[in-house]
Image (cartoon, rainbow, N blue to C red):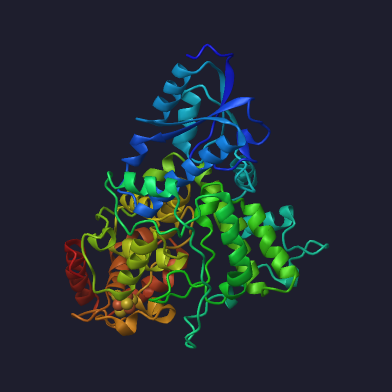
Length: 503
Ligand code: SF4
């Protein structure tokens, strides 16, 4: 101990990097110490993508440097674990009280409670999870669309004075499902940020760990200033073209007009409220079309906050859900251990490998769809996605993988499995025409693995899906197949090849 007067410690967790929010919001230098811990256990807990690990560690170290520049005494320490870091801090300094913002994870909250850390409400979302639980309490089903409209109204985002949605419709999804355009248009470019000493030091240090993927290239904002620049660029160049082709997949385009702001929001560098407001202002100025603005705001204040709410509502039981008894390992084609002839998969994986990112349809309808129909273990898939995407976190990946992509919760979140054959990917991407497989074939060597596995998935899980009226048409179609036996024989070959990394 230093012998100084005991002081309060504000503990800033690694995904709460915002000066004007949480426990630091009202405090000035001299009033408290700041503790930040980089945990060896966390660094070694997964095979992280290089860009994901670099982003988090670099953003933490940049935030510590900014606070020091402002005059705060910052104890940024490396420790075997987060609790060990807290213990070491309290051993070294005279600490009369430790306070933190509620963490983003269930286990993180339990850890703080065990350690006797006082918490204040997490303010990194527009809807606190306790408010979400109140909204959910008297509902028979938790429809995202209902939550989204409730958010729009109570937050007064794109709402007319009489309470109706701007432009008369809540939902412009039907305008936002266009396939890739054939006009060869260019898509908005984004700035990259120059690497500084912190970035270079972090890049060198993470090479000592078991990491994969391309190295950091300044693509992901590590400070609030950089994140605000990314937001400005998106509002100016990306928002208007975002909507119509938000579900399209193009081989040579890793992001199309997607905002790529999630990593900044998930680290606390940007708040969803300021992002939604910037989009609404752009709409009011006439700079972006309604379908783009509504579709974007739906993602930010609807989907993202809904996922956060259900995570807290259903944890901790939710993370062990596996109602379809899926137990296949994550395919080697996903982890970099093997390549694949499936053009749509190799394209999506190359985007992940190069950037730690794939957009929502590549995640759901290519990677998630293959994992669902092949029967990949939901916990293993969650871990892989959490480690591989720059915007990964338990709260975001669990509902998206367990609930949305793999239907492992039996329909608690999504009312039917997002399973599809090659036809959907053929419509929404440019991959199939360059692929050795044919999306219309379900048997034989040229059969599209998605098409074969789609029918096999329905047959394999017929009993579990029979009670779901939204699956009745698909199941009836499966039962009518005259070559179902051949399809199932081909599925055995496909699954073996998938496991061996030769598909
Ligand atoms: Fe993907 Fe099948 Fe199309 Fe090949 S044919 S790109 S595997 S959907």
